Image (tube, rainbow, N blue to C red; front, side, top):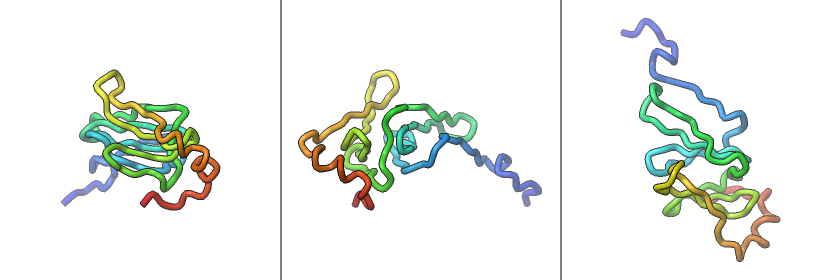
Length: 116
């Protein structure tokens, strides 16, 4: 029977992003952590080797807009964006897609309520 219930003794950990988290999505063997204006990649297998890496300082996800359709897709201020695994440095890349619908989508960003 444990005599200590401190979270750190049980393997729990806390990692801050400095802003409200708007969504979480698994991609490859990592957890993508979205803020409204930033994106982070959490890697590692336990609290001994977790690392929160900043993927983008200028791109994040609108809350409720993240969906996994082959790759993570989400709505950002730049428009519809996807995040996907690559072999190059950093292991992940993001790209704005569906440019034809951007004039319709962008004025409606504040109305997002669900991605399903």
